[in-house]
Image (cartoon, rainbow, N blue to C red):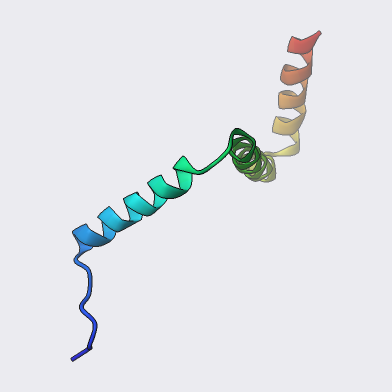
Amino acid sequence: MSQFESLTEEQEKELEKALVDRIASNLTFTELIDIVTTLSLREVAGQLQEMSEEEKLETYKEVFEKQV
């Protein structure tokens, strides 16, 4: 038998939430922007990788025609 006790699943979830809350409460606005930017870049890269060349061209036209 181990000399350490294990957390229950509920305790582990509670600990995870508390640690996330602790980290999130200490983030600055700049750090939040960096995180959102990084996640956005990853999402866009993944989407572009999945798109066909035709879809990319159509999306390009949609994005830049709306800016004109």
